[in-house]
Length: 76
Image (cartoon, rainbow, N blue to C red; front, top):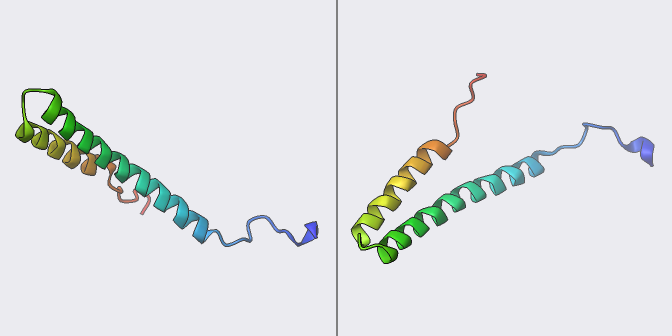
C-alpha cells in the first residue's frame, strides 16, 4: 500500500482555497473588529463623542484596506 503513494501527485486545490479563505476571513475580520473597537472606545471612553469615534474608525478602515488588500504579483 505504501508503494501507491507518490509525493506531489495529489490535487491540493481545495486545501489552497480553504487556506486562502481562512486567511482572508482572519485579515478582514480583524480589521472590522479593530475599527469597531476604536469607534466604541473613542465614543464612550473619551469626551470626543460619536463623530470623532466614527471618523477615527473610518480612517482606520481606509488605511487597513489600503495596506491589507492583495498586491499584484510582481513576478508577472
